Length: 278
Image 1 (cartoon, rainbow, N blue to C red):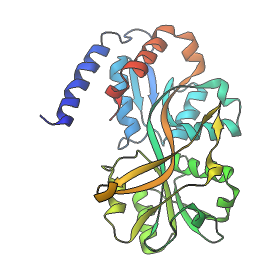
Image 2 (cartoon, rainbow, N blue to C red):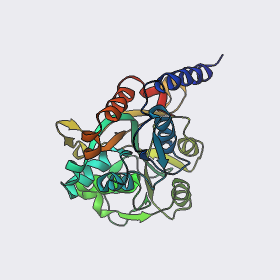
Image 3 (cartoon, rainbow, N blue to C red):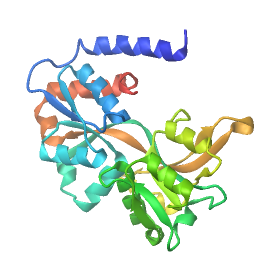
């Protein structure tokens, strides 16, 4: 039996066990996630099943999720940690309305340019460079805003709104954009990472600027990591970049007033996190 099959069986048993401690009574919880095609939505579905009392709603991503939590339109949401840090810098009152409860998985900033172009992020610190940064409201778009706040030289580049990672990569390949910057779960199985490594016209570049070493409550918002993007001799191909986390956030008022649900959610994140990850 394959490792994937075994993991699937274990996940089923874990979710079945969690259903015995889930909350059945009270008002249904709203879990705000992301597009149906993304990992946040998949996590939300598993989390709702584990809680036994959750309604999963789609969203544009991290920004909208945090906004919904702050307004009380949702009780639980998923967001990139760097997006939360960026939004609390802009609006400190958000910190009293939305609380970071626990981290789920690593997410990294990936930069892509055309083969033969620059090798690291200094290539983005030049006038006239066009960078595809995603759709406003997406985590990738806000990550770019946060990054440019930490290293002002990135502001020399011209950010361009794109609807999808695919359209951004196609624009880089055609020469429409000089680079694309987006946030992904670091996996060689990612369809976007596979697209880049299998395309002779595209390549990843490193993010190594030390000004990106910002801290929140004593802990780094980004960690510098070497991410393998392709297997091969001598360790394969790796890219050095900055990584944050996809994390679970909650509406602070709900969390304080609903002890049973809060405790169940904490139990899931502490002991059964793997069961709710895609």
